[in-house]
Length: 507
Image (tube, rainbow, N blue to C red; front, side, top):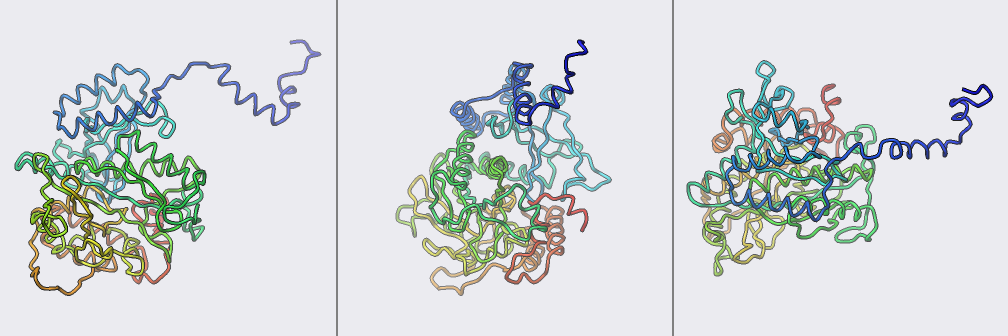
């Protein structure tokens, strides 16, 4: 080196911050062109691929055939680096593990995880559980949102011996749907209308115990937002991701409350619909985080405004005939449809904890904000637990309105189908106007009614039924027993979907 020339350190020290930043940004492109070549698929092609995979599921293509097809694809597609495998715990939280593709292809039949670290799963002394890939439930992901080179599949939780794990509600719903089809040729359909809030800043829920409030992105109101504002930007982006993932979008819009949103998509087979609920919330949170915001599915995050629901539309078909439709039936429903409603209303208080499983969800059941807390059915009264929407031969359905967006979708849809088709029949005389009954207005009453329900023990199994009640009581005991009128930090901090494990462990 020439001693008269400045050293590299001296050259760098003399440079402006702007010049250094420019060099740092340019260096990777200039020095390492083409080192990474991970899978990135255009949105229109993603939609075609995901819709085709969805059609295979709906057609009940044999799982072993699909498994062979997917494994061959993963082997051949060199640009995939990892497979995200998802499962849902008893309370409804979505968990994800990223497996290196090469490892997954070698070990797909022997995937395990620590179940004792999942609330509501196995005890510490029996921690290991198995995870089986549900190959038909396979999704290609938008790379700008989830990162390039990844695909996603849902998993089924298994015992050590490979048998279904009792607390895996996804397997329970899927098994029940398969039983309906094989035994009676019936296909259960569901469509969920999921409302949420968009708040300023990332991880707003985790920081609520420090901030003490949420900050709205928009106060525009129902159906109103300018094309370029933050709420509309979020909705547009999230809807594009939904469409690309094969949701079959219908409409999207701001909701009644400030910064509230809803993005609707078409009905589908019940177990597919429940997967889409989890993906809807996942992609909403991911899109919001990339925009520096938080998508929240707390049922009532802010005092004094409307809460969020997850209205769940249900119907049953046999050989493509909608069993709930009758042109001349009351409100366009058949006797089978009204029987389905009657059984749900007869078990409404038993079901309430499953549909409203957090302390915060009982704030939403407030009659001042169009709360669906009346145990009755109506075509027009939005205060009714069950509504009968306008429908035709294809779209006739039953809409259960009292479900909060933080409910475990697999458990909620399974419990409603099982109750509507097999539950205790209604004892009310249809010719007499019964007195109006109401759902519980607090989680303690809901837990008590749930624990005392023999029918819910049969629906879930005694062990899982007791475990669910225990989890909900533990969450409730971390919060003030009397709700009062103001949102308390504890009902946000210890909410089962606000995964702040650091704070949970300090309680």
